[in-house]
Image (cartoon, rainbow, N blue to C red; front, side, top):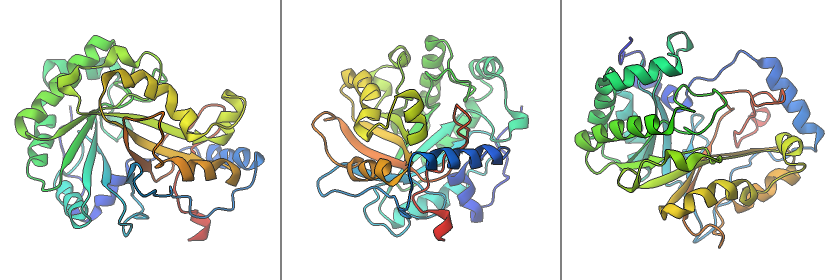
Length: 320
């Protein structure tokens, strides 16, 4: 087993914020662009959400720095594998967030970003319960305790998804709950005061994975709008509210603050404008929704129906 390695210098904090994109399917990306354009033309070159006074708070996963100077950003989102990363880079992220008055949302992914070293789902589960990864989580939590920004930990997201995208997704619910509690107990011990985000994708069956009120401060959902996908699966474009509603209604029973932990949209002008205008608009149908966090990059994984990797980035690359 590989343990936490110091492979990334503090000068390359963008790696932490960027994650590892799967660049092995350029033809799929090109095909996705062609399919999306078939539904209409996108001329908007900056599709960042409109910030409404008195509306929902806004955060961003922002490896390109497009939101670096925007004052209305409450949260800086980072993705962190628990292997093969220099945790000193978290200090750089902390300084960046602190200078801008932002919280840190840290998504801890229980694997390596090196696909050659990733374990199978069964191997990961077995080694985790054997205690092999307690040291990894303890090292992360110990570093979090040293940070000055308020921190939210989001561990093992989208656990109910059965597509095979993540090694920890689709486990037996009791196994996932035990793993989640084990990791959050370590965070609680090493970094008291850290908030916990339980973050399903928003699909049916997610409730079986709920770890209990004492292990959840916030609930995070993933909400993405891809016009070409909507036309195939939903017989037409969906609005932000329509995409959020199924997951929100499943988690509303817990009476916890709800975030959209990952938000993105792509399509024609007519499709993305309503998303831009309503993502941070306070709506009566979602009283527990407190913040939306934009995923400002190309998707790491290809979408179904040969749609490739959608580009959620708010700035049109062609305009730079």
